[in-house]
Length: 215
Image (cartoon, rainbow, N blue to C red; front, side):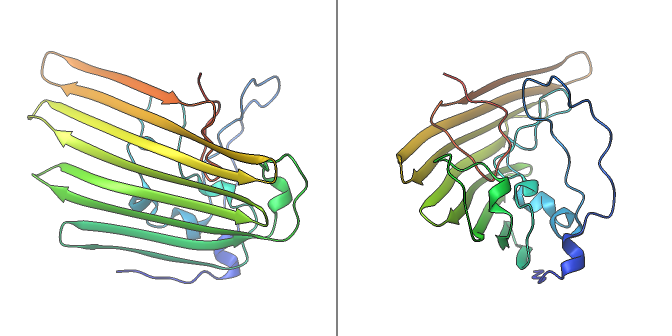
C-alpha cells in the first residue's frame, strides 16, 4: 500500500504538451496528464469508460487535469488480495479556471476527493466502484459509478459502467445518469468490438472529461 503526500514539485509539469490544433475546434481538446503526482499509479483509478480503446474519443469520469493548481495532495493506492484500492484528496487554488454549474465567479479553493475500489475474480474479470467529489462554497458536484469487466470465454469480453452525477448550485440542483457498454471479440479469424455510450443532458462531471452530453 502506497500513501505519498505530495511536494510542490510533484505538481509541476515536467514535460510540455504535444502540439494539437485548437483553432475552430467544436469541442474541448484533450491534453494528457504530465504531472508526476497524478501520473504515478494512475491505473488504480481507471474505469471501463476512461480505459477506452485507441479508436474511441477521450472520455473520463476522473481527469486529473481538472485539478489545475493544487497546493496540497495525498494519494493512497494498493492491492490487498483480490482488492484494488485507490484514494486521492487535494485542493485547487485556481477554481476560477474551472466551470461553475451556476455560471458565477468563484473565490477560494476547491476541495477534491476521489475514491476507487475494485475486486478481481474468475481470472480476468472484475467489479468496482468510483466516487468523485468537488466542493467549492455553495457549488458541489459528486459522481458515483459502478462497473464490471467480464471475460465470458477466451475470446469474448464484456465491459460496462453505470454512473450518476449530483450537482448543486445557488440556481438549483441537477442529476443525470451515464451509461457505457463494450463487447470485444479477439480470435484468429475475427476481431470485433461494439460500444454503447450515453450521457444524460443533466449529467455533470466537473472532475471528468466529457466533451458533450447526449439527449
